[in-house]
Image 1 (tube, rainbow, N blue to C red):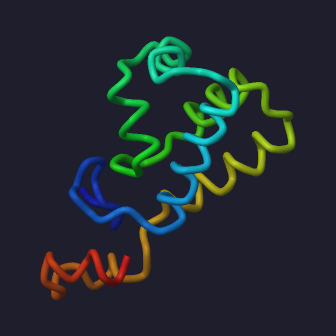
Image 2 (tube, rainbow, N blue to C red; image 1 turned 90 degrees about the vertical axis):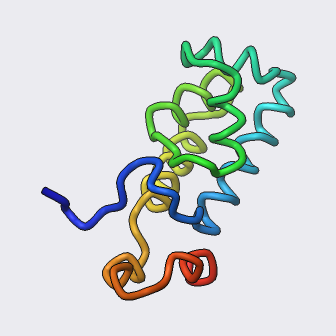
Image 3 (cartoon, one colour; image 1 turned 90 degrees about the horizontal axis):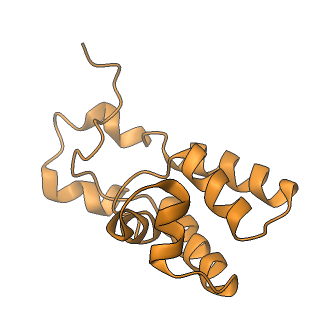
Length: 111
């Protein structure tokens, strides 16, 4: 049974907020001097997962965001603010209510 949220990997276009946060996460990693491989080891995932997070190809998991930022040396306030924004970025937009009547190609424009 669906709760109205898109399934992970549903192909929906990334929200602008998720794109901005992914870019900020990438900048934070680079500022810390960490490679994709270093970040991947922190989460026990592959480097491709980190790249997909930073490119907004997948939703930002708050736990991943928290662990990554802590490993990059972020202070607790920055981590908490980023996690809140990541949670907001994962919320479906208003248009998801109407996705059954909107053509698939249109989702990139409204998101």
